[in-house]
Image (cartoon, rainbow, N blue to C red; front, side, top):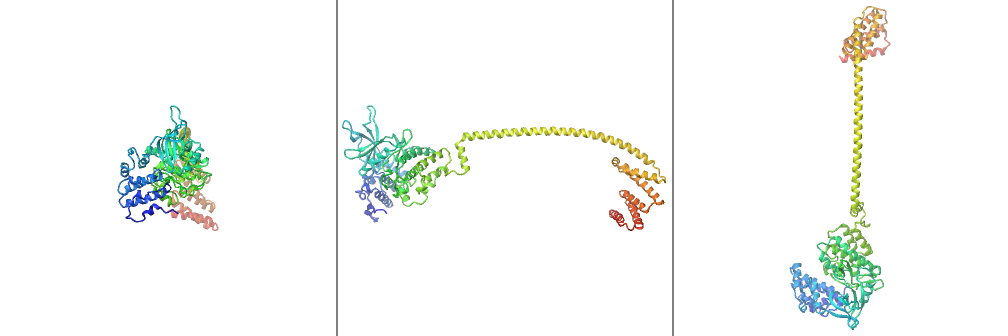
Length: 623
Protein backbone atom coordinates (compact mmCIF):
# COMPACT_ATOMS: atom_id res chain seq x y z
CA UNK A 1 0.00 0.00 0.00
CA UNK A 2 1.29 3.46 -0.87
CA UNK A 3 1.94 6.14 1.72
CA UNK A 4 -0.20 9.28 1.70
CA UNK A 5 1.28 11.88 -0.64
CA UNK A 6 1.70 15.01 1.46
CA UNK A 7 2.07 17.25 -1.59
CA UNK A 8 -1.29 16.20 -2.96
CA UNK A 9 -2.83 16.45 0.51
CA UNK A 10 -1.72 20.08 0.70
CA UNK A 11 -3.90 21.04 -2.28
CA UNK A 12 -6.75 18.61 -1.64
CA UNK A 13 -9.51 18.31 -4.21
CA UNK A 14 -10.43 22.03 -4.28
CA UNK A 15 -10.47 22.83 -8.00
CA UNK A 16 -10.36 26.57 -7.36
CA UNK A 17 -7.25 26.42 -5.19
CA UNK A 18 -4.16 27.92 -6.81
CA UNK A 19 -1.74 25.19 -7.91
CA UNK A 20 1.59 27.00 -7.66
CA UNK A 21 4.30 24.34 -7.94
CA UNK A 22 7.17 26.20 -6.19
CA UNK A 23 4.89 26.68 -3.17
CA UNK A 24 3.59 23.11 -3.15
CA UNK A 25 7.05 21.52 -3.44
CA UNK A 26 8.76 23.89 -1.03
CA UNK A 27 10.84 21.86 1.39
CA UNK A 28 10.72 18.66 -0.67
CA UNK A 29 13.48 16.22 0.32
CA UNK A 30 15.48 13.88 -1.96
CA UNK A 31 13.95 10.93 -0.08
CA UNK A 32 10.50 12.07 -1.26
CA UNK A 33 11.33 11.77 -4.95
CA UNK A 34 8.58 9.21 -5.66
CA UNK A 35 5.92 11.43 -4.04
CA UNK A 36 7.21 14.51 -5.90
CA UNK A 37 6.98 12.68 -9.25
CA UNK A 38 3.46 11.43 -8.57
CA UNK A 39 2.31 14.88 -7.45
CA UNK A 40 3.93 16.54 -10.49
CA UNK A 41 1.90 14.39 -12.85
CA UNK A 42 -1.39 14.85 -10.99
CA UNK A 43 -0.93 18.60 -10.66
CA UNK A 44 0.30 18.91 -14.24
CA UNK A 45 -2.88 17.25 -15.52
CA UNK A 46 -5.08 19.48 -13.36
CA UNK A 47 -3.26 22.61 -14.53
CA UNK A 48 -3.61 21.50 -18.19
CA UNK A 49 -7.35 20.90 -17.71
CA UNK A 50 -7.66 24.50 -16.38
CA UNK A 51 -5.92 25.86 -19.47
CA UNK A 52 -2.83 26.85 -17.50
CA UNK A 53 -0.13 24.31 -18.43
CA UNK A 54 3.03 24.06 -16.33
CA UNK A 55 5.98 25.89 -17.90
CA UNK A 56 9.67 25.15 -17.74
CA UNK A 57 10.38 28.25 -15.64
CA UNK A 58 7.93 27.12 -12.96
CA UNK A 59 9.26 23.57 -12.96
CA UNK A 60 12.87 24.61 -12.50
CA UNK A 61 11.91 26.88 -9.61
CA UNK A 62 9.78 24.19 -7.99
CA UNK A 63 12.28 21.31 -8.09
CA UNK A 64 15.58 23.12 -8.34
CA UNK A 65 17.05 21.27 -5.39
CA UNK A 66 15.92 17.87 -6.75
CA UNK A 67 16.66 18.23 -10.45
CA UNK A 68 19.86 16.17 -10.07
CA UNK A 69 17.59 13.12 -9.65
CA UNK A 70 17.21 11.69 -13.14
CA UNK A 71 13.68 10.56 -12.32
CA UNK A 72 12.54 14.04 -11.41
CA UNK A 73 14.35 15.48 -14.40
CA UNK A 74 12.46 13.14 -16.76
CA UNK A 75 9.17 13.75 -14.98
CA UNK A 76 9.62 17.51 -15.33
CA UNK A 77 10.18 17.14 -19.09
CA UNK A 78 7.07 14.96 -19.42
CA UNK A 79 4.86 17.35 -17.43
CA UNK A 80 5.94 20.35 -19.52
CA UNK A 81 5.47 18.50 -22.79
CA UNK A 82 2.07 17.08 -21.80
CA UNK A 83 0.85 20.51 -20.69
CA UNK A 84 1.64 22.06 -24.07
CA UNK A 85 0.24 19.17 -26.14
CA UNK A 86 -2.97 19.28 -24.03
CA UNK A 87 -3.23 22.97 -25.01
CA UNK A 88 -3.31 22.03 -28.70
CA UNK A 89 0.34 22.14 -29.70
CA UNK A 90 1.88 19.29 -31.65
CA UNK A 91 4.85 17.52 -30.08
CA UNK A 92 7.39 19.21 -32.39
CA UNK A 93 5.83 22.60 -31.61
CA UNK A 94 5.85 21.89 -27.86
CA UNK A 95 9.46 20.78 -28.03
CA UNK A 96 10.46 23.95 -29.88
CA UNK A 97 8.57 26.22 -27.42
CA UNK A 98 10.28 24.65 -24.42
CA UNK A 99 13.73 24.99 -25.93
CA UNK A 100 13.04 28.63 -26.68
CA UNK A 101 11.89 29.32 -23.10
CA UNK A 102 14.24 31.10 -20.66
CA UNK A 103 14.31 29.95 -17.09
CA UNK A 104 14.63 32.85 -14.64
CA UNK A 105 17.00 30.88 -12.40
CA UNK A 106 19.50 29.99 -15.08
CA UNK A 107 21.71 32.92 -14.14
CA UNK A 108 22.72 33.71 -17.71
CA UNK A 109 23.80 30.14 -18.50
CA UNK A 110 24.02 29.53 -22.24
CA UNK A 111 21.10 27.31 -23.18
CA UNK A 112 21.40 27.68 -26.95
CA UNK A 113 23.61 24.60 -27.19
CA UNK A 114 21.03 22.35 -25.53
CA UNK A 115 19.57 19.78 -27.91
CA UNK A 116 16.90 18.40 -25.57
CA UNK A 117 14.61 19.62 -22.81
CA UNK A 118 16.52 17.51 -20.29
CA UNK A 119 19.78 19.24 -21.31
CA UNK A 120 18.08 22.58 -20.78
CA UNK A 121 17.04 21.67 -17.24
CA UNK A 122 20.49 20.28 -16.41
CA UNK A 123 22.01 23.58 -17.49
CA UNK A 124 20.16 25.14 -14.54
CA UNK A 125 22.25 23.12 -12.12
CA UNK A 126 25.44 23.44 -14.09
CA UNK A 127 25.16 27.20 -13.89
CA UNK A 128 25.96 27.02 -10.17
CA UNK A 129 28.86 24.59 -10.56
CA UNK A 130 31.93 26.58 -11.66
CA UNK A 131 34.55 24.47 -13.36
CA UNK A 132 37.38 23.58 -13.40
CA UNK A 133 37.99 23.01 -9.68
CA UNK A 134 40.06 20.69 -7.51
CA UNK A 135 38.55 17.63 -5.81
CA UNK A 136 39.69 14.67 -3.75
CA UNK A 137 42.32 13.85 -1.19
CA UNK A 138 45.60 15.74 -1.15
CA UNK A 139 48.24 14.61 -3.58
CA UNK A 140 51.95 15.36 -3.76
CA UNK A 141 52.58 19.06 -3.66
CA UNK A 142 49.50 19.65 -1.52
CA UNK A 143 47.06 19.85 -4.38
CA UNK A 144 43.98 17.64 -4.64
CA UNK A 145 44.44 14.47 -6.65
CA UNK A 146 41.69 15.30 -9.17
CA UNK A 147 40.74 18.36 -11.17
CA UNK A 148 37.06 18.41 -12.23
CA UNK A 149 36.92 19.75 -15.77
CA UNK A 150 33.40 19.06 -17.10
CA UNK A 151 30.07 17.74 -15.85
CA UNK A 152 29.19 14.81 -18.12
CA UNK A 153 26.18 13.32 -16.34
CA UNK A 154 23.81 13.49 -13.37
CA UNK A 155 21.67 10.93 -11.62
CA UNK A 156 19.76 10.17 -8.47
CA UNK A 157 22.94 9.04 -6.70
CA UNK A 158 25.30 11.77 -7.80
CA UNK A 159 27.12 13.56 -10.59
CA UNK A 160 29.78 12.31 -13.00
CA UNK A 161 32.61 14.59 -14.09
CA UNK A 162 35.39 14.36 -16.57
CA UNK A 163 38.51 14.89 -14.44
CA UNK A 164 42.28 14.70 -14.67
CA UNK A 165 44.09 12.34 -12.30
CA UNK A 166 47.31 13.93 -11.10
CA UNK A 167 48.47 10.62 -9.62
CA UNK A 168 48.80 9.03 -13.09
CA UNK A 169 49.51 12.13 -15.17
CA UNK A 170 52.73 12.21 -17.15
CA UNK A 171 54.79 15.25 -17.93
CA UNK A 172 53.33 15.84 -21.37
CA UNK A 173 50.09 13.90 -21.06
CA UNK A 174 47.18 14.27 -18.68
CA UNK A 175 45.45 11.18 -17.30
CA UNK A 176 41.68 11.49 -17.64
CA UNK A 177 39.11 9.65 -15.53
CA UNK A 178 35.34 9.67 -15.07
CA UNK A 179 34.78 10.70 -11.45
CA UNK A 180 31.44 9.90 -9.86
CA UNK A 181 30.71 12.05 -6.79
CA UNK A 182 27.84 10.73 -4.66
CA UNK A 183 25.04 12.93 -3.36
CA UNK A 184 24.48 13.38 0.36
CA UNK A 185 22.69 10.31 1.71
CA UNK A 186 24.24 7.99 -0.89
CA UNK A 187 27.63 7.64 0.85
CA UNK A 188 27.19 3.94 1.60
CA UNK A 189 26.84 3.22 -2.07
CA UNK A 190 30.29 4.42 -3.11
CA UNK A 191 32.18 1.58 -1.43
CA UNK A 192 29.62 -0.92 -2.72
CA UNK A 193 29.77 0.35 -6.29
CA UNK A 194 33.56 0.54 -6.40
CA UNK A 195 34.14 -2.88 -4.92
CA UNK A 196 31.46 -4.48 -7.07
CA UNK A 197 32.67 -3.04 -10.35
CA UNK A 198 36.31 -3.81 -9.46
CA UNK A 199 35.52 -7.53 -9.29
CA UNK A 200 34.49 -7.57 -12.96
CA UNK A 201 37.15 -8.04 -15.61
CA UNK A 202 35.66 -7.54 -19.05
CA UNK A 203 36.31 -5.14 -21.93
CA UNK A 204 32.62 -4.13 -22.02
CA UNK A 205 32.52 -3.14 -18.33
CA UNK A 206 33.98 0.20 -17.21
CA UNK A 207 37.14 -0.41 -15.13
CA UNK A 208 37.36 1.06 -11.61
CA UNK A 209 40.58 2.98 -10.95
CA UNK A 210 40.06 4.36 -7.46
CA UNK A 211 37.50 5.07 -4.76
CA UNK A 212 37.61 7.12 -1.56
CA UNK A 213 36.43 10.30 0.16
CA UNK A 214 37.61 13.88 0.48
CA UNK A 215 38.51 15.63 3.75
CA UNK A 216 34.95 17.04 3.78
CA UNK A 217 33.49 13.51 3.49
CA UNK A 218 32.49 13.67 -0.18
CA UNK A 219 32.45 10.08 -1.45
CA UNK A 220 33.60 9.20 -4.98
CA UNK A 221 34.53 6.40 -7.38
CA UNK A 222 36.94 6.94 -10.28
CA UNK A 223 36.33 5.00 -13.51
CA UNK A 224 38.32 4.86 -16.69
CA UNK A 225 37.07 7.65 -18.93
CA UNK A 226 35.19 6.29 -21.90
CA UNK A 227 35.70 8.80 -24.67
CA UNK A 228 32.52 8.64 -26.65
CA UNK A 229 28.82 9.08 -26.03
CA UNK A 230 25.85 7.25 -24.54
CA UNK A 231 23.97 4.50 -26.33
CA UNK A 232 20.98 6.86 -26.47
CA UNK A 233 22.94 9.40 -28.49
CA UNK A 234 24.48 6.66 -30.63
CA UNK A 235 21.01 5.46 -31.59
CA UNK A 236 19.88 9.00 -32.31
CA UNK A 237 22.83 9.43 -34.68
CA UNK A 238 22.24 6.09 -36.40
CA UNK A 239 18.47 5.65 -36.30
CA UNK A 240 17.98 6.12 -40.07
CA UNK A 241 20.39 3.34 -40.97
CA UNK A 242 20.01 1.19 -37.85
CA UNK A 243 18.83 -2.28 -38.82
CA UNK A 244 17.61 -5.03 -36.53
CA UNK A 245 20.83 -6.97 -37.11
CA UNK A 246 22.96 -3.91 -36.28
CA UNK A 247 20.96 -3.52 -33.06
CA UNK A 248 21.67 -7.17 -32.18
CA UNK A 249 25.37 -6.74 -32.91
CA UNK A 250 25.42 -3.75 -30.56
CA UNK A 251 23.61 -5.58 -27.76
CA UNK A 252 25.59 -8.84 -27.83
CA UNK A 253 28.83 -7.40 -26.35
CA UNK A 254 26.74 -5.57 -23.73
CA UNK A 255 25.18 -8.91 -22.82
CA UNK A 256 28.60 -10.55 -22.59
CA UNK A 257 29.77 -7.81 -20.23
CA UNK A 258 26.66 -8.22 -18.05
CA UNK A 259 27.21 -11.98 -18.03
CA UNK A 260 30.75 -11.36 -16.76
CA UNK A 261 29.20 -9.41 -13.87
CA UNK A 262 26.72 -12.21 -13.18
CA UNK A 263 29.57 -14.72 -13.17
CA UNK A 264 31.04 -13.01 -10.09
CA UNK A 265 27.64 -12.73 -8.40
CA UNK A 266 26.77 -9.14 -9.36
CA UNK A 267 23.46 -8.01 -10.86
CA UNK A 268 23.47 -4.49 -12.31
CA UNK A 269 19.75 -3.75 -11.68
CA UNK A 270 19.76 -0.42 -13.54
CA UNK A 271 20.65 -1.21 -17.14
CA UNK A 272 19.45 1.49 -19.51
CA UNK A 273 20.86 3.41 -22.51
CA UNK A 274 22.15 6.21 -20.25
CA UNK A 275 24.38 3.71 -18.40
CA UNK A 276 25.97 2.35 -21.57
CA UNK A 277 28.71 4.34 -23.27
CA UNK A 278 30.03 3.84 -26.81
CA UNK A 279 33.79 4.32 -27.02
CA UNK A 280 35.77 5.60 -29.99
CA UNK A 281 36.07 2.08 -31.40
CA UNK A 282 32.29 1.76 -31.45
CA UNK A 283 32.34 -0.77 -28.60
CA UNK A 284 29.69 -0.50 -25.84
CA UNK A 285 30.83 -0.24 -22.22
CA UNK A 286 28.50 -0.76 -19.24
CA UNK A 287 28.89 1.74 -16.39
CA UNK A 288 27.18 2.76 -13.13
CA UNK A 289 26.93 -0.19 -10.74
CA UNK A 290 25.50 2.12 -8.09
CA UNK A 291 22.47 0.00 -7.26
CA UNK A 292 23.97 -3.33 -8.25
CA UNK A 293 23.21 -6.32 -6.06
CA UNK A 294 25.69 -8.90 -4.83
CA UNK A 295 25.07 -12.39 -3.51
CA UNK A 296 25.53 -11.43 0.13
CA UNK A 297 23.85 -7.99 0.06
CA UNK A 298 20.52 -7.19 1.64
CA UNK A 299 17.58 -6.86 -0.78
CA UNK A 300 16.95 -3.44 -2.28
CA UNK A 301 13.55 -2.40 -3.57
CA UNK A 302 14.24 1.16 -4.74
CA UNK A 303 12.06 2.14 -7.67
CA UNK A 304 14.81 4.14 -9.27
CA UNK A 305 14.54 6.05 -12.52
CA UNK A 306 11.65 7.20 -14.68
CA UNK A 307 11.82 7.24 -18.42
CA UNK A 308 15.39 6.03 -18.04
CA UNK A 309 15.02 3.28 -15.46
CA UNK A 310 11.30 2.61 -15.16
CA UNK A 311 11.07 2.12 -18.91
CA UNK A 312 13.46 -0.88 -18.64
CA UNK A 313 12.60 -2.09 -15.13
CA UNK A 314 11.45 -5.68 -14.65
CA UNK A 315 8.01 -6.05 -13.03
CA UNK A 316 9.37 -8.02 -10.07
CA UNK A 317 11.97 -5.31 -9.41
CA UNK A 318 9.28 -2.62 -9.39
CA UNK A 319 7.23 -4.75 -6.99
CA UNK A 320 10.19 -4.98 -4.60
CA UNK A 321 10.30 -8.77 -4.99
CA UNK A 322 13.98 -8.93 -5.88
CA UNK A 323 15.63 -11.07 -3.22
CA UNK A 324 19.20 -11.98 -4.11
CA UNK A 325 21.06 -11.19 -7.34
CA UNK A 326 18.17 -12.27 -9.65
CA UNK A 327 19.81 -12.02 -13.09
CA UNK A 328 16.28 -12.01 -14.55
CA UNK A 329 15.98 -8.23 -13.98
CA UNK A 330 19.07 -7.60 -16.12
CA UNK A 331 17.75 -10.00 -18.79
CA UNK A 332 14.49 -8.01 -18.89
CA UNK A 333 16.41 -4.74 -19.18
CA UNK A 334 18.63 -6.09 -21.97
CA UNK A 335 15.56 -7.30 -23.87
CA UNK A 336 14.02 -3.87 -23.36
CA UNK A 337 17.15 -2.13 -24.66
CA UNK A 338 17.13 -4.34 -27.77
CA UNK A 339 13.41 -3.57 -28.27
CA UNK A 340 14.20 0.15 -27.95
CA UNK A 341 17.13 -0.10 -30.38
CA UNK A 342 14.96 -1.83 -32.99
CA UNK A 343 11.74 0.19 -32.62
CA UNK A 344 12.73 3.46 -30.93
CA UNK A 345 10.07 2.86 -28.25
CA UNK A 346 10.45 2.02 -24.57
CA UNK A 347 9.22 -1.45 -23.53
CA UNK A 348 7.25 -0.32 -20.46
CA UNK A 349 5.97 2.94 -21.93
CA UNK A 350 7.31 6.07 -23.57
CA UNK A 351 6.46 8.35 -20.62
CA UNK A 352 6.85 8.09 -16.88
CA UNK A 353 3.09 7.93 -16.46
CA UNK A 354 2.74 5.20 -19.07
CA UNK A 355 5.52 3.16 -17.45
CA UNK A 356 4.08 3.53 -13.96
CA UNK A 357 0.56 2.72 -15.17
CA UNK A 358 1.72 -0.47 -16.82
CA UNK A 359 3.94 -1.55 -13.93
CA UNK A 360 1.11 -0.89 -11.45
CA UNK A 361 -1.69 -2.59 -13.39
CA UNK A 362 -0.02 -4.81 -15.95
CA UNK A 363 -1.76 -7.61 -17.78
CA UNK A 364 -0.32 -11.06 -18.20
CA UNK A 365 1.80 -11.55 -21.27
CA UNK A 366 3.97 -8.45 -21.10
CA UNK A 367 3.45 -4.97 -22.48
CA UNK A 368 1.02 -5.24 -25.38
CA UNK A 369 3.14 -2.77 -27.32
CA UNK A 370 5.91 -5.32 -27.86
CA UNK A 371 3.52 -7.46 -29.91
CA UNK A 372 2.57 -4.61 -32.22
CA UNK A 373 5.63 -4.06 -34.38
CA UNK A 374 6.99 -5.32 -37.64
CA UNK A 375 10.25 -7.20 -37.30
CA UNK A 376 11.69 -10.57 -38.21
CA UNK A 377 9.61 -13.35 -36.65
CA UNK A 378 12.57 -15.05 -34.98
CA UNK A 379 13.92 -11.82 -33.46
CA UNK A 380 10.42 -10.92 -32.29
CA UNK A 381 10.19 -14.26 -30.43
CA UNK A 382 13.63 -13.75 -28.82
CA UNK A 383 12.77 -10.26 -27.57
CA UNK A 384 9.30 -11.33 -26.40
CA UNK A 385 10.87 -14.15 -24.36
CA UNK A 386 13.36 -11.80 -22.71
CA UNK A 387 10.51 -9.38 -21.82
CA UNK A 388 8.17 -11.99 -20.37
CA UNK A 389 6.34 -10.77 -17.22
CA UNK A 390 7.02 -14.08 -15.49
CA UNK A 391 10.76 -14.39 -14.68
CA UNK A 392 10.52 -18.17 -15.05
CA UNK A 393 9.47 -17.73 -18.70
CA UNK A 394 12.46 -15.54 -19.54
CA UNK A 395 15.93 -16.65 -20.44
CA UNK A 396 17.56 -18.14 -17.39
CA UNK A 397 20.90 -16.52 -18.11
CA UNK A 398 22.24 -13.59 -20.09
CA UNK A 399 24.60 -16.02 -21.77
CA UNK A 400 21.70 -18.00 -23.30
CA UNK A 401 20.09 -14.73 -24.43
CA UNK A 402 23.33 -13.65 -26.14
CA UNK A 403 23.74 -17.13 -27.63
CA UNK A 404 20.31 -16.95 -29.27
CA UNK A 405 21.06 -13.49 -30.67
CA UNK A 406 24.31 -14.80 -32.14
CA UNK A 407 22.43 -17.78 -33.58
CA UNK A 408 19.90 -15.38 -35.08
CA UNK A 409 22.64 -13.33 -36.76
CA UNK A 410 24.46 -16.43 -38.03
CA UNK A 411 21.24 -18.16 -39.19
CA UNK A 412 21.85 -21.06 -36.82
CA UNK A 413 18.93 -23.05 -35.43
CA UNK A 414 17.54 -22.16 -32.01
CA UNK A 415 16.15 -25.42 -30.52
CA UNK A 416 13.11 -23.95 -28.73
CA UNK A 417 12.21 -21.76 -31.72
CA UNK A 418 13.23 -23.58 -34.92
CA UNK A 419 11.63 -27.02 -34.75
CA UNK A 420 10.18 -27.41 -38.24
CA UNK A 421 12.29 -29.10 -40.97
CA UNK A 422 11.31 -26.32 -43.37
CA UNK A 423 12.67 -23.60 -41.03
CA UNK A 424 15.88 -25.58 -40.47
CA UNK A 425 16.35 -25.98 -44.23
CA UNK A 426 15.89 -22.25 -44.83
CA UNK A 427 18.41 -21.45 -42.07
CA UNK A 428 20.93 -23.92 -43.49
CA UNK A 429 20.55 -22.27 -46.90
CA UNK A 430 21.13 -18.80 -45.43
CA UNK A 431 24.02 -20.05 -43.30
CA UNK A 432 25.79 -21.86 -46.15
CA UNK A 433 24.88 -20.03 -49.36
CA UNK A 434 28.08 -21.06 -51.17
CA UNK A 435 27.70 -24.70 -50.15
CA UNK A 436 24.06 -24.68 -51.26
CA UNK A 437 25.05 -22.99 -54.54
CA UNK A 438 27.77 -25.61 -55.07
CA UNK A 439 25.29 -28.41 -54.31
CA UNK A 440 22.83 -26.88 -56.77
CA UNK A 441 25.56 -26.66 -59.43
CA UNK A 442 26.63 -30.27 -58.75
CA UNK A 443 23.02 -31.45 -58.80
CA UNK A 444 22.46 -29.59 -62.06
CA UNK A 445 25.61 -31.16 -63.51
CA UNK A 446 24.49 -34.64 -62.40
CA UNK A 447 21.02 -34.07 -63.88
CA UNK A 448 22.59 -32.77 -67.11
CA UNK A 449 25.00 -35.72 -67.30
CA UNK A 450 22.16 -38.12 -66.56
CA UNK A 451 20.10 -36.45 -69.29
CA UNK A 452 22.97 -36.74 -71.77
CA UNK A 453 23.52 -40.38 -70.79
CA UNK A 454 19.80 -41.17 -71.08
CA UNK A 455 19.66 -39.37 -74.39
CA UNK A 456 22.71 -41.29 -75.64
CA UNK A 457 21.18 -44.56 -74.48
CA UNK A 458 17.91 -43.62 -76.11
CA UNK A 459 19.71 -42.73 -79.36
CA UNK A 460 21.60 -46.03 -79.24
CA UNK A 461 18.40 -47.99 -78.62
CA UNK A 462 16.73 -46.10 -81.45
CA UNK A 463 19.60 -46.84 -83.82
CA UNK A 464 19.51 -50.50 -82.80
CA UNK A 465 15.75 -50.61 -83.31
CA UNK A 466 16.09 -48.95 -86.73
CA UNK A 467 18.81 -51.42 -87.72
CA UNK A 468 16.74 -54.33 -86.46
CA UNK A 469 13.71 -53.05 -88.35
CA UNK A 470 15.81 -52.64 -91.49
CA UNK A 471 17.07 -56.20 -91.15
CA UNK A 472 13.53 -57.42 -90.56
CA UNK A 473 12.25 -55.53 -93.60
CA UNK A 474 15.08 -56.93 -95.68
CA UNK A 475 14.29 -60.41 -94.42
CA UNK A 476 10.59 -59.93 -95.14
CA UNK A 477 11.39 -58.62 -98.59
CA UNK A 478 13.54 -61.68 -99.25
CA UNK A 479 10.83 -63.96 -97.91
CA UNK A 480 8.23 -62.10 -99.96
CA UNK A 481 10.30 -62.54 -103.09
CA UNK A 482 10.71 -66.23 -102.28
CA UNK A 483 7.00 -66.62 -101.66
CA UNK A 484 6.24 -64.75 -104.82
CA UNK A 485 8.43 -67.15 -106.77
CA UNK A 486 6.80 -70.09 -105.03
CA UNK A 487 3.33 -68.74 -105.79
CA UNK A 488 4.31 -68.30 -109.42
CA UNK A 489 5.51 -71.89 -109.47
CA UNK A 490 2.32 -73.05 -107.82
CA UNK A 491 0.25 -71.05 -110.28
CA UNK A 492 2.13 -72.62 -113.16
CA UNK A 493 1.65 -76.09 -111.69
CA UNK A 494 -1.97 -75.33 -110.90
CA UNK A 495 -2.59 -74.09 -114.41
CA UNK A 496 -0.96 -77.21 -115.80
CA UNK A 497 -2.91 -79.45 -113.48
CA UNK A 498 -6.12 -77.58 -114.22
CA UNK A 499 -5.51 -78.08 -117.89
CA UNK A 500 -5.00 -81.79 -117.33
CA UNK A 501 -8.10 -82.03 -115.14
CA UNK A 502 -10.19 -80.13 -117.69
CA UNK A 503 -8.95 -82.38 -120.46
CA UNK A 504 -9.72 -85.47 -118.41
CA UNK A 505 -13.13 -84.24 -117.25
CA UNK A 506 -14.10 -83.41 -120.82
CA UNK A 507 -13.45 -86.95 -121.97
CA UNK A 508 -15.09 -88.66 -119.07
CA UNK A 509 -17.05 -91.64 -120.34
CA UNK A 510 -20.59 -91.58 -119.14
CA UNK A 511 -21.01 -95.24 -119.96
CA UNK A 512 -23.07 -97.59 -117.96
CA UNK A 513 -20.08 -99.03 -116.32
CA UNK A 514 -20.79 -98.34 -112.67
CA UNK A 515 -17.16 -98.89 -111.69
CA UNK A 516 -15.86 -96.24 -114.11
CA UNK A 517 -18.55 -93.83 -112.96
CA UNK A 518 -17.52 -94.34 -109.32
CA UNK A 519 -13.87 -93.87 -110.17
CA UNK A 520 -14.57 -90.68 -112.04
CA UNK A 521 -16.79 -89.46 -109.21
CA UNK A 522 -14.05 -90.12 -106.60
CA UNK A 523 -11.53 -88.32 -108.80
CA UNK A 524 -13.75 -85.28 -109.21
CA UNK A 525 -14.57 -85.07 -105.49
CA UNK A 526 -10.94 -85.35 -104.48
CA UNK A 527 -9.80 -82.73 -106.96
CA UNK A 528 -12.58 -80.29 -105.86
CA UNK A 529 -11.27 -80.43 -102.32
CA UNK A 530 -7.71 -79.63 -103.35
CA UNK A 531 -6.34 -76.26 -102.24
CA UNK A 532 -4.98 -75.20 -105.62
CA UNK A 533 -8.39 -75.73 -107.26
CA UNK A 534 -10.07 -73.47 -104.69
CA UNK A 535 -7.87 -70.60 -105.82
CA UNK A 536 -9.72 -70.70 -109.19
CA UNK A 537 -13.48 -70.31 -108.41
CA UNK A 538 -14.57 -70.72 -112.04
CA UNK A 539 -12.73 -73.99 -112.44
CA UNK A 540 -13.98 -75.11 -109.00
CA UNK A 541 -17.62 -74.52 -110.01
CA UNK A 542 -17.02 -76.48 -113.21
CA UNK A 543 -15.61 -79.40 -111.19
CA UNK A 544 -18.52 -79.34 -108.72
CA UNK A 545 -21.05 -79.26 -111.59
CA UNK A 546 -19.23 -82.18 -113.22
CA UNK A 547 -19.13 -83.98 -109.87
CA UNK A 548 -22.90 -83.52 -109.44
CA UNK A 549 -23.49 -84.71 -113.00
CA UNK A 550 -21.46 -87.88 -112.42
CA UNK A 551 -23.12 -88.34 -109.03
CA UNK A 552 -26.61 -88.22 -110.63
CA UNK A 553 -25.44 -90.85 -113.13
CA UNK A 554 -24.12 -93.00 -110.33
CA UNK A 555 -27.42 -92.69 -108.39
CA UNK A 556 -29.44 -93.60 -111.48
CA UNK A 557 -27.30 -96.71 -111.98
CA UNK A 558 -27.85 -97.66 -108.31
CA UNK A 559 -31.64 -97.31 -108.57
CA UNK A 560 -31.79 -99.71 -111.55
CA UNK A 561 -29.47 -102.19 -109.97
CA UNK A 562 -29.85 -104.27 -106.92
CA UNK A 563 -28.35 -101.66 -104.61
CA UNK A 564 -29.55 -101.37 -101.01
CA UNK A 565 -32.35 -98.79 -100.41
CA UNK A 566 -30.31 -97.38 -97.57
CA UNK A 567 -27.29 -96.86 -99.90
CA UNK A 568 -29.60 -95.07 -102.30
CA UNK A 569 -30.93 -92.93 -99.37
CA UNK A 570 -27.36 -92.08 -98.44
CA UNK A 571 -26.48 -90.96 -101.98
CA UNK A 572 -29.62 -88.83 -102.09
CA UNK A 573 -28.37 -87.09 -98.89
CA UNK A 574 -24.84 -86.69 -100.37
CA UNK A 575 -26.20 -85.11 -103.57
CA UNK A 576 -28.41 -82.80 -101.45
CA UNK A 577 -25.22 -81.52 -99.70
CA UNK A 578 -23.57 -80.88 -103.11
CA UNK A 579 -26.65 -79.01 -104.39
CA UNK A 580 -27.13 -76.89 -101.26
CA UNK A 581 -24.92 -74.00 -102.47
CA UNK A 582 -26.12 -74.02 -106.09
CA UNK A 583 -29.66 -75.38 -106.30
CA UNK A 584 -31.74 -75.38 -103.13
CA UNK A 585 -34.79 -77.01 -104.76
CA UNK A 586 -32.75 -79.98 -106.03
CA UNK A 587 -31.18 -80.25 -102.55
CA UNK A 588 -34.67 -80.35 -100.97
CA UNK A 589 -35.86 -82.95 -103.54
CA UNK A 590 -33.02 -85.31 -102.68
CA UNK A 591 -33.63 -84.81 -98.92
CA UNK A 592 -37.32 -85.71 -99.30
CA UNK A 593 -36.30 -88.82 -101.24
CA UNK A 594 -34.01 -89.70 -98.36
CA UNK A 595 -36.86 -89.25 -95.84
CA UNK A 596 -39.21 -91.47 -97.89
CA UNK A 597 -36.65 -94.27 -98.14
CA UNK A 598 -35.83 -94.06 -94.41
CA UNK A 599 -39.46 -94.09 -93.34
CA UNK A 600 -40.01 -97.19 -95.56
CA UNK A 601 -36.87 -99.20 -94.96
CA UNK A 602 -35.48 -97.86 -91.65
CA UNK A 603 -38.43 -96.62 -89.59
CA UNK A 604 -36.58 -97.37 -86.36
CA UNK A 605 -33.66 -95.08 -87.24
CA UNK A 606 -35.32 -91.94 -85.94
CA UNK A 607 -32.02 -90.16 -85.45
CA UNK A 608 -31.11 -90.30 -89.12
CA UNK A 609 -34.60 -89.29 -90.05
CA UNK A 610 -34.42 -86.38 -87.55
CA UNK A 611 -31.14 -85.10 -89.00
CA UNK A 612 -32.50 -85.16 -92.54
CA UNK A 613 -35.73 -83.51 -91.40
CA UNK A 614 -33.71 -80.73 -89.71
CA UNK A 615 -31.88 -80.08 -92.98
CA UNK A 616 -35.20 -79.82 -94.81
CA UNK A 617 -36.51 -77.30 -92.26
CA UNK A 618 -33.30 -75.28 -92.53
CA UNK A 619 -33.70 -75.13 -96.32
CA UNK A 620 -37.34 -74.12 -95.97
CA UNK A 621 -36.47 -71.24 -93.61
CA UNK A 622 -33.64 -70.17 -95.94
CA UNK A 623 -36.07 -69.91 -98.85
